[in-house]
Amino acid sequence: MGRRAANQDQLEMVFEEEPYSRILATVGSELVETGGILLGSRDDYVVKKFVYDPHGSRFSAGYDPDITFLNKVIKEEWEKNHLALIGFVHSHPRGIRRLSGDWGNGYGDIGYLRKIFAAIPPLEKFLVPIIYSTHDGDPFEIFPYIAFRDQAENYEEANLVIRKSGADLPTISQDTHMPRLESGPPIKSDDGPPRRADGKVETYRTKDGEAEFTFRFVKVDDQYEVDILETPSYGNLDTSLHITHRVNSPRGGYQADMGLIDKRNLDEVQQMASQWAEFTWTYIKSNKPSR
Image (cartoon, rainbow, N blue to C red; front, side):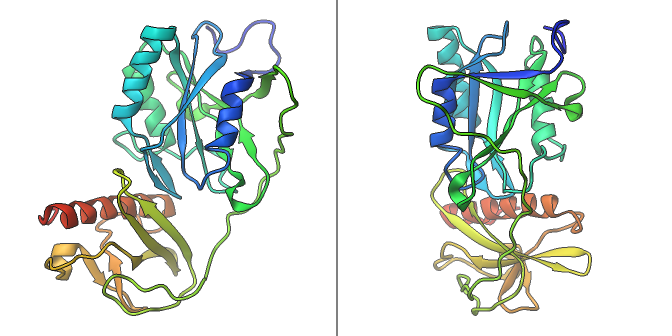
C-alpha cells in the first residue's frame, strides 16, 4: 500500500470493536508503561486482534516488550488465523503524547520502529498508537500514529475509526496535560536512611516481573541525578559501591552510577536507571556482580 490512498484526504486507523475494547480494559486502565501488539491484514491494516503483553518490563519512562512471548504469539496467529503483525500500542505518562526517539540498539520508540522495519521487509507502514491510561484518574486518550518505512521519525496522526458491533464506545478527548512531579513522604532504600527531596518518583519492574526498584529523578542545575529509594534486599552480598555500581547521594543514601551519559536528557537517564535495576537484580539473584 502507498502512504496515502488517492481518494483519502486523511489517514485513518481502523479498529474492530473487540480489540479496541481489550485495549481499554488493559493498557487503557493500567499503570504506564504497558503495551501489546496489533494484528490484522497488511492489505487493509484494519486491527482485528490485540494481544496484551503481560511480561514486558515496565518503567514509567519506557516499556521493554517481552520479545520471546510476542514472537510466539505472532507465529501462532499467522499459522492459525492468518493474522499478521501490523502495529504496536503502548501507554505513556500523561503529557508525553509523542513517540520517544532513537536511543540506539533498538531502544526508544523510533529506534524500535526502525528495528521492526529492518526485520520485516514487506512492512510498508506500522501502527503505533500512544495511550493515556485512566490509572491516574484522568480520561482515557489515544493518539493514533502511523509510521512509514524509511521515515519512521516522520510518523503521522490519523483519524481513529472504530467498527462498532453494539454499544457506544467511550468518547476520545485529544486534550493533553503536563506530567505530574511528585515530592511525597520519605522513602527508605534497602540500606540507606529515609530522606525527602523534590523530584519525580518512579517504580521500575524487572523484566521477569519478580522485583521492583523505586527511584527519584532529581534535577540539579541542568542535569538529573538518580536517588535509589527502594530496592530488593541485597541479603548477605557484598554491597560496596564499586560492586553495586552506586555512589553516595548528597541527599543521603545512594544514587545509581549513571556512567558517561547525557545527564541533561531525562529519557536517557531513566533508560539507564532501568538498566541499572536489571544489573542489580541479576547480581542479587545470581550472587555475581554485573560488569
